[in-house]
Each structure stands twice: as C-alpha cells, then as structure tokens.
Length: 212
Image (tube, rainbow, N blue to C red; front, side, top):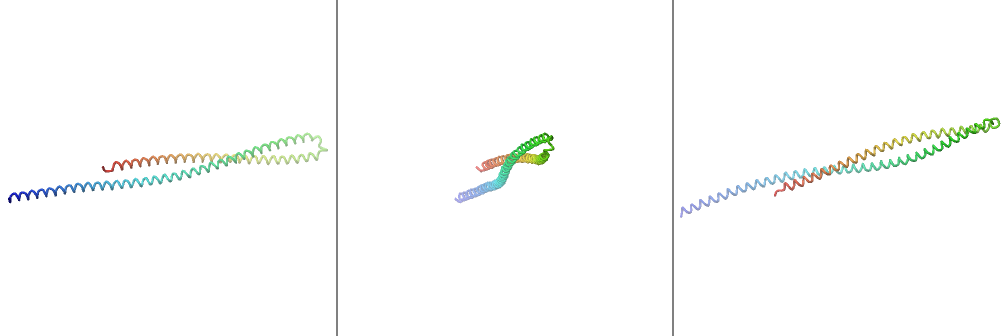
C-alpha cells in the first residue's frame, strides 16, 4: 500500500508539473500574439492619421484652387463687360467720325461752290467789290471751319487707333484669363483624381489589414 501510494503521489506531481509547464507556454504564446496585434493596430492607426492629414491638406488645396477660380471668373466677367463698353464707345466714335466726314464733305462742296462764284464775279469786281470782300471773309471762315474739322478728324482717328489698341490688349488679357481658367480646371481634375485614388487605396489598405 505504501508503494502504491508513493507511485500515485509521484504520478500526480508529474501531471501537475506538466500542466503548469503547458499553461505557461500557452500564456507566453498568447501574450506574444496580443503584443503583435497591438503593435499592428498602433502602426495602422499611425498610417490612418497620416492619410487623414494628407486628405485634409488636399482638401485645403482644393478649396484654395476653387477660390482662385472664382476670382478669375469674376475678373473675366469684368473684362468682358469692359470690352463690351469699349466696343460701344468705339461704335459711337465711328458714328461721330462718319458724321464729321459728311460735314467735311459738305464744307468742301460749299468751298467749291463759293470759289466758282468768285470766279464768275471777277468780271464784276468794280461794282461788286463789297460782295467779293464779304465772300472772301465767308470763304476764310469756311476754311477755318475746314481746318477745325480736319483737326477734329485727326483727333478722332487718333482716338480710334488708341481704342483699337486697348481692345487688342483686352483681347490678350481675356485669352490669358481663359488659359489660366483652363489650367486651373485641369489642376482641379488632377487633384480630384489623386484624392479619389488615395481614398480608394486607403479603403483597400484598411480592408486588407483588418485581422481575420
């Protein structure tokens, strides 16, 4: 009986020791697995934070580009309005120039007529001297008018040339603004495509890295 009791005690002690060793090994294994999962989660959280910061920066850039595009559109509308106003002024100037030309032509016709009268009255110089003097004075006045109209015509032509230069400059500015607008739209599309790709990659990464 003593021998059997001792055998049972030894067996029991051996089984207890074996159970303790197995439990310790399993505990160490699960502890390492938990530590690894914690480390992976921390790394994923850091990556997600970096992606969120990058996304916020991209959204800020997109907002800035949208504001610039709005300002450019407003500037373009202002330029177009200015161009329309200049065009109206140019048409008015052309109308005034046409009226001046007609007046000049009428004055020239009048001068020709008066000169013909002077030539016809030269034979009557003695008795029509006073009338000749009056006609000469009138002729001088008409020549002054002609000179004034000629000067005015020159001024209008200079103004017309200046307005054409301003219109050409405005056309160049409008083309430049349209090009800037196109460039900004292309940049916005690129940023939107990049943002969509980053969002897709981020979502794919999160799905791939979620522990099963």
